[in-house]
Image (cartoon, rainbow, N blue to C red; front, side):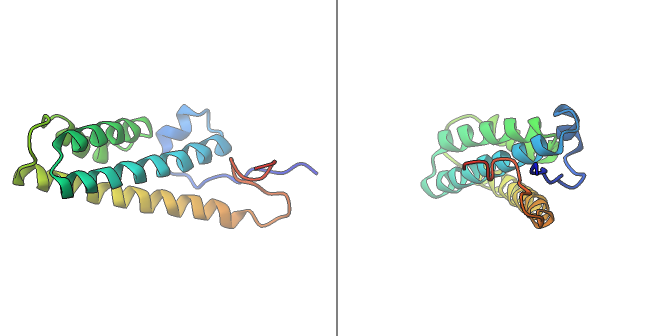
Length: 137
């Protein structure tokens, strides 16, 4: 019996279109996206704690690009503000922008996690897999 791949819920519509409406590919990209955004969120936190504007700029750039790729324009715009702020010391205005972008990223991670967990909970039959799971992994 061939394993079937569980479809993610209908969200991230532009990503799904970009991937040819392939639920398995969409779920795989969402898993990678969630991890990448989580990593950049940690770097933004570190940048705030250390006052490292260059680190904030670089993390915001990578996170903004990831957000734009999956069609998350709101978070992408908030991150672009940080990215375009330059690389001097972090001031109170930039701190507020980072806090706002951070909130958007946390919401995005939570939403992505719900989609991923929903896909996993649908994998109830023996042999069902999510992209990146099973098959020798």
